[in-house]
Length: 123
Image (tube, rainbow, N blue to C red; front, side):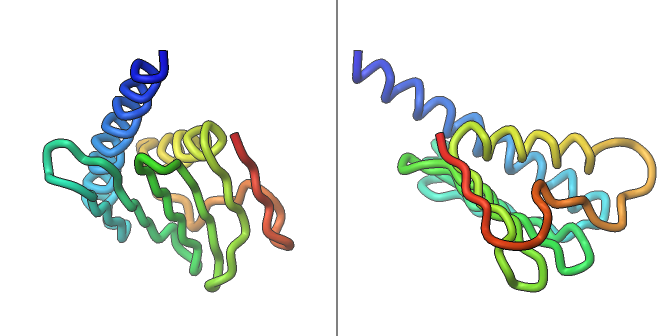
């Protein structure tokens, strides 16, 4: 059972890496600063670091690797939100949908929680 679960997780990481690369290219084509750096060799993609500037000093970072998955959202250099696991993937999906909608880009996306103390989620 454990080898099968490990292989399924590696498959999820691989799929996320490919999706992050595509999202970075899409955002760059729309004029948003975004980057995706892949760990490991270019084909296997054992992990990735995705960073996007959403305007108004609003940054997001999504990390995926064999060790875990995390989403960090910050404004003016201060972390606002940190999510892990499934919650991180859901937040990435929400932001990707907003950013890829046709029409004008939003000035800045609303954060998932009100500014204040760091909110952490886990899975």
